[in-house]
Image (cartoon, rainbow, N blue to C red; front, side):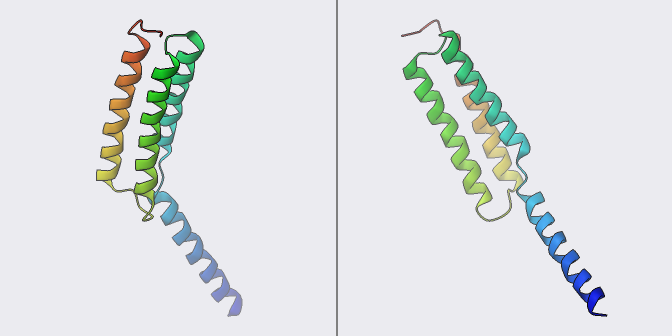
Length: 106
């Protein structure tokens, strides 16, 4: 009886832990952040981004990361929060593209 109760408690704990991690799963957001960070680093390496431009792009990425942290703070990232983060990532992606292709390396 004690073993059954312990097993039940352990399984309940795992289910709760898994449920919480599933609610804050942001692998797509994290992967996109990594891709955009890579694009910024590539721009620096190739010279298509100036130091000043790179600093601005990094600040934009930090804003997205802050939004993600705020969304995760309550233990659940809602659909609306994901949508807002995605919009901000789209905006940052466009900025990175424009800055990399503006032929302004100063």
